[in-house]
Length: 130
Image (cartoon, rainbow, N blue to C red; front, side, top):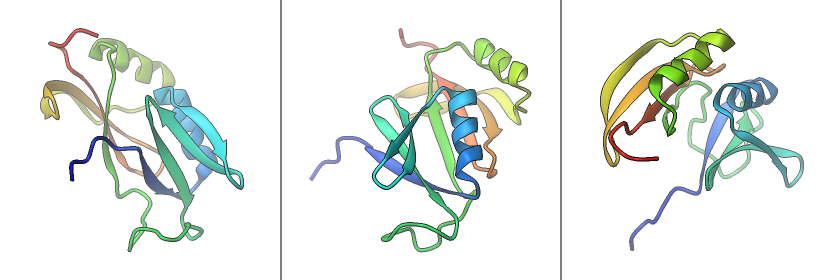
């Protein structure tokens, strides 16, 4: 067997509305509402399903915990533009820009936290054309 790609992941969050606002406003993700008023955030060909802490759907992670994720998202935007965007929104950048290693080579990254304290890395591949 060979896995081709990630389809979706699930974040357990304290407040679905606050999470939707942050990810759509700050990161430009699209809110999706599906089956039974469930909410997800779309990015490219993937999505992030949201479960409210204490009301998770089964089956679920053994210990679903808000704030336990460490996620890296790739953008084609230059890091300077990303920093300006977060500064305008009043979102604190906790680290960066720094050089890191991504799945396909060197990346440049900045780090911030979402409303639950998840670590969010926003990166680009500066040497790869858009």
